[in-house]
Image (cartoon, rainbow, N blue to C red; front, side, top):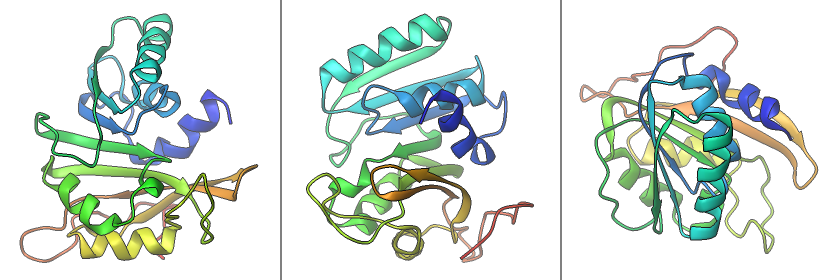
Length: 194
């Protein structure tokens, strides 16, 4: 996949030029962080979290080359541990949660980082079988279950793309369920609930 593929995969979950404060949890060297910036525009502030300082340095360099005016903060940390972040308009996590055995517990912790109307955009392999690179897979059906258990609205499947690694990759959108117990995500044309 290239940059345009990354943008297309998450585009329906991030409004163009929406700005705000977003975190990319498990950012790596930033392929999806750059896509997030491309969509959210120059007004976005991004906090990129990853355990690997070298990947974060590569991300910073790529961001400076492509979007030099972007407010980017990098945090070398484990995204499963308590993070001191500002209230977030959104969280993006791409190909990262499959390293964590308890998806629902992690999603619950992330919900606490989001503003009440915040968004969670998830990108993962749509595969059931574990392997050494994806030890705890989270296909869309599993994400839907884990998100509900963690207090989110039913996720919307935004897009899928073929993947040379595990067949297919998906992007999904959810947000914290409203305090009244209803769903806080509207149904968007072309998106679907599974």
